[in-house]
Length: 79
Image (cartoon, rainbow, N blue to C red; front, side):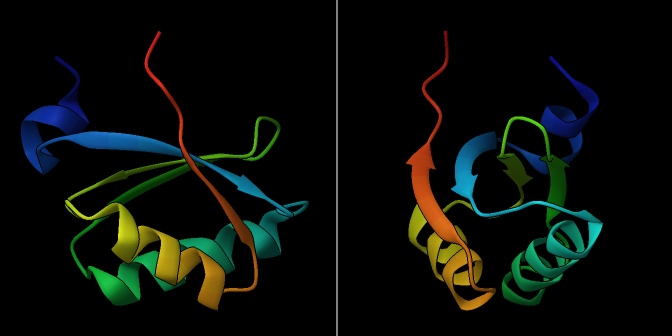
């Protein structure tokens, strides 16, 4: 179990389209933290994935990502 899972509960990873720079990373991070101020957010820019802990609703993450101006493509299935 990772540190994030022990401190933030279930960490889910989502695919997000349109993130191309650190400004995009900040916009998505800020939007998700506005929806869940204590949320864990980690973005992997090269793969276009966003890992979120502390928010249990996919719809909450979807809304935050879309309000930041990016395309929410849904959860990444675990291997």
